[in-house]
Image (tube, rainbow over all chains, first blue to last red; front, side):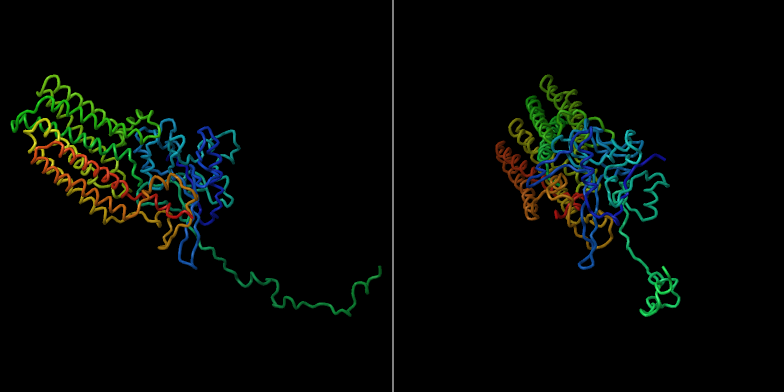
Length: 244
Length: 314
């Protein structure tokens, strides 16, 4: 079976720090493909092109709420609706590793692919006038000048809690496939049949069960910790029995 | 969705052009069948020039939609999968057919050649309606658009607009055709009213398939967005929201329903009775305004599922 690279994002450990956002922006604005436009970055209404954003949702009703930090980027769908609608062929899915990419030299900036993406994963670059999206750091993960451990997407490298896993979801033994299997990984908006390659791991209840023997010394069978005999202050001490 | 005016002008202008061409060819076809007398060559050649002007204006408007208009030629590449690519191919071929049809009438008058070219032109006009409509109808998650009614309405509204212009043209150039043309225009306009009404009724009772629960994959019934990742706007907040109130949307809806159907029909009746082309021209312009509003509403009404991720700024 062919390769399908993807991210698996663990919502249970994402702390919403936005390190993946800044790391992604830094890497992808500095590469050969050109900058990712920003306007008024320090002004009143800053706006810009991003491949990755972290959103916040509150689930439940106060006081029983949970805050879910939700990193959102292109899901590299196995059946991407954005690709067949592209009139120029600029939008394509690589056969060798399943990454959905835009050829910036062919894109005419008609935005039809953005309309055709139910996830809002594509953003037009307001200055280069072409459609942009997550590339899974395709210019990084195959770079043999980097040490093997660094051949991973910038967002994955940056995540301080390892909430982002990267690998081949078609390989059943990969770290991402195991995570999807073992932790109940799911796809977003399954109702449209896009079969996103990226998966999310759900929040889990963190519970700890303490047994009594974990709170007390197991080698204290008489339960008299703290009552151990202490010598009387008038009892002979070492000084009394030893000649120096 | 945020309505793009380039696309609004493109679809309404070429719709009127296609409709007018169908009206022109119907005049020749009816005369060929012997139902009425053949109109003058000028009726056809100048009429084709008018069709080309409308199509050219639409094509011109479409370039404003592109970030890189100089690369527009590339958009013919993916006709196997993309309806947009198919439209990009069919539009110039149709324009060529219209030009050939007009030239045939200008140089040789009505005959087998013009009939063949006109038949091909009508087929291309209908194909172009299908391509334009399918650009929107083929997107399953834009549920307001994902219906055969989208294609039918592009066809019927374009024909209604073009036939009304054709009636105006007949009043000026071929008065013998006026009453027949007016009757056909009224019929097509009423059919468009029925089908657009059907689309409005369908969309009013649509339930979105995607919810914030499926969007982030959390099953809890109460989920509220607290932040969307940035405080300033982004492409996602600009291009997918029309930014108007529900009341505004409703006003546009009633506005276009009034401007596209009853008002032009009343003026059509008056213009046909008086045999006055200026009255009919006013009817066409009024209806064109209404069609701009109709197209605006068509885009604004579609709720893109990506908007579920952009419900609150912070």
